[in-house]
Image (cartoon, rainbow, N blue to C red; front, side, top):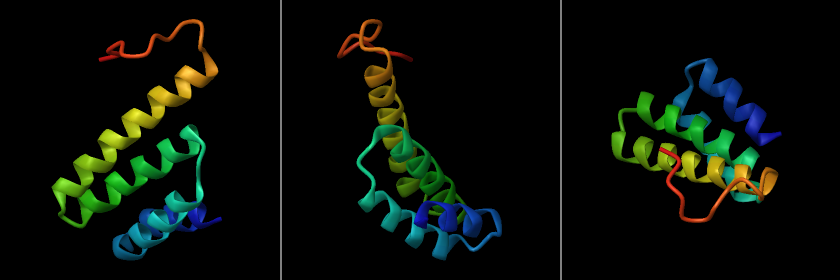
Length: 85
């Protein structure tokens, strides 16, 4: 629910409130794929707020969550430590 609210706030341009809701949503989520989407949205929010350090951090975390989600979905094709770049 907080993730959806955060995304709506982000799309409406209310970046400070979006970041707050998305941070709350992130603290409640433990699955990699939903965490990917939240981290990606947080990266957008912080980018538009002008904090490029936080934006970069959350986008890097989104990439990490995406890798985790792929490892869970396709364990036979993913090797730990392999570079997907």
